Image (cartoon, rainbow over all chains, first blue to last red; front, side, top):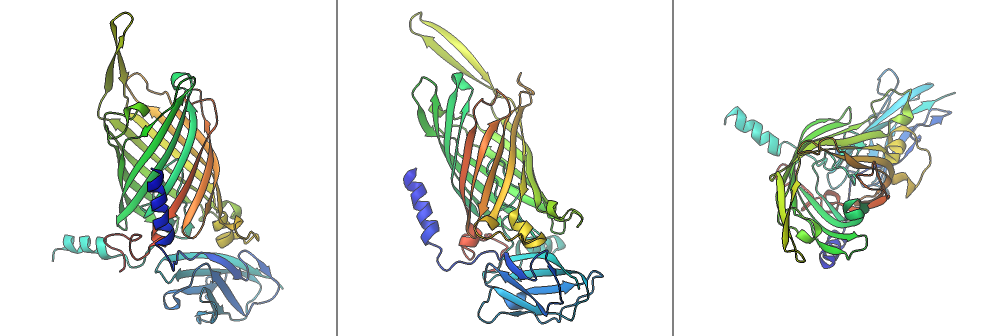
Length: 119
Length: 315
């Protein structure tokens, strides 16, 4: 039994080079659930995996449900795990960031978070 | 082509991208250790180690090392296979080691609601009698166990209670149905030459349990970045409740079970988990046991080969 377990662990350990996985949100700016003092120029979302930009989206909505981003989601040049979307000037209030991404191995993940702007 | 054929085709081919294990909308559910979860996965538990003292023969330490593998046939239907090595050590007696019975199962996820982070599956397991060793009490008869599995995340709670949103529950309700109502054994006493027959009755057993989880992953990803960084940002504290209640054959209502507080750490390709096993009554035991597991996400490890459904996933 020990040999079977060791063999299977070796297969799992060495048989899977160059791996990708589900992309989780690692960090965002503005941060998840944060309050900022001025209108941010963009929202940046860093994921745990490289992203397929053409199949991924980041949208920002105000409290009334109106989209306030500039529809220009793009990958960070040096870091393909990071997405940027620029924003129109934001008034004080609560905003919701909705993301859906496809990592380069085709796994889909999605989620949302909020941040507040105060002046 | 008939409409029914088209529907069948869409069932098998209609899934574009790979969602896979433990997701319902924005919710990631880890694989639980003591109660089976509702997901149809490509996953490998290698190994699951548990140890607890049962009341059998005045107190017997039951230590098990198990391996389980699950494979998706379609995105919503999968099969499972499990085997274990069991060591029984009665107090004041020598220990016995052997294989438990082979366990097989199938599961079909028939409902998923991403907005409400909910899913429900139907499954059936079978413990194949006679495939294990009698010296570790492996049954000589087969037991069937149909069950209903469910999972629900609470990310849809109102924003007034944000810190409850990372809570989730998974659970199951099923019935284990032995194919033999009783087993008759005859013991010969050499001193007297007398024989004594013993009849052990095998009731149908209601198997029920649930896992209550609090996901730090969900908290920091969806609710509030509280500044936890690796490895603490991947923790999921949980409490599992695993119970068995015989339904007939003179043992009805004699529930046994454990309450298992613990924690799971979920990485990119695997998770590790450990829980204490606290008996709920003296029928279950009097000492705290433990269960620990190393669990691999095959869909993340081998996304283009072993870790995808045989039919219906994107090539």
